[in-house]
Image (cartoon, rainbow, N blue to C red; front, side, top):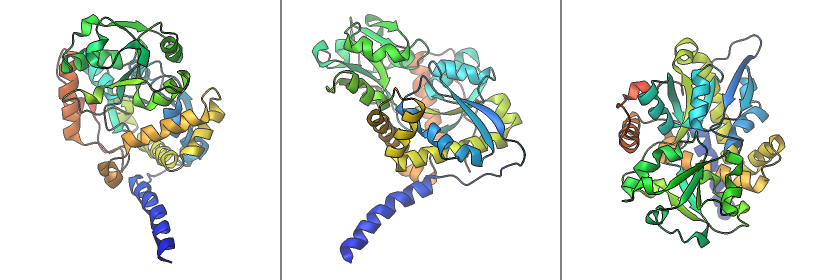
Length: 335
């Protein structure tokens, strides 16, 4: 009986953690479902399984929303789509948002954070001889032109004591990055750590050399989250609360059921293997769930860490000006 009790407790504790991590349910208006467009940061990958889970499990429908999920071509592109009104909300990199607000005054703000730690990294084949950041000098690195990873690279390089100008960036479509690495057309490709499983599979299951931005001294900042335009934040706050509730339910459900979440994504995008999708869901879970988010809710944002993120990104990217917390973060959308 004692052994059974311990087993039941072991099963119950994670369930309680996920239950605590879910936000309160907002009011849902009657009438026809409201059509919205939700953009990914770039492409369709396993990390996006929670949003398809929200669609498949009826969480968006429960909020009386008719949702279309579209692919972004990088966080910069996703943020521009939101600013232009082509997407109601998007999953995008906080560093990219800070950069665009500071340099272009793009009217978009963060509503919640999914990646509570820096997710950016560079992946290299072992035979490249690259082992440390110093080895990146004189090498070819690749990512999409609209990705935030190359934008932050100068700050990462300086933090690691190397000259960022001694590395060359080759920009390509996100779907082609694994092939560029495996064919050795480039020395390393940029990827969030959630995409490690996909790259390893493309490399025949071999371990890759990972140079994570989080390993750079002082690089402790928020990563991706959910963003919306200033206009929508002002005009339709209740709509955004409903979107965030459904998104958070999708995240929590996928975290609790990664096998099912992976299968849901595979049904929508068969080119993504179930095992890769599952590995990415687990990687997202590790970035999203912290003691704070378990206690206060998935997506919870600490304004003090927003300020720290601004401080780091402003220095790393040598931005035109330093934005305020209020310019890039809108609180109150997760109840």
